[in-house]
Length: 69
Image 1 (cartoon, one colour):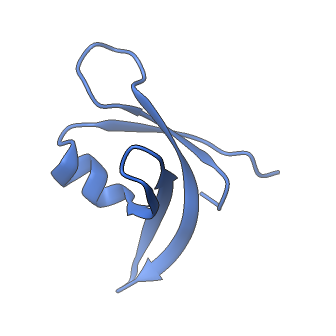
Image 2 (image 1 turned 90 degrees about the vertical axis):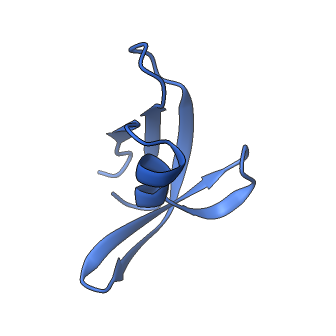
């Protein structure tokens, strides 16, 4: 994942994508990779991916689409 890549989410259990976010940062924090996203529904520039799919939307599935070469 790199800044500018696209994350497509399935937050409900009906086999369709519900939301799109753009990667705004990829950081190494305490030996792990933290992916941050920009979004309009929470009006965030650095929303944490792990928190989004475990705390805010447990069971959500993220699909990654890389735009880099």
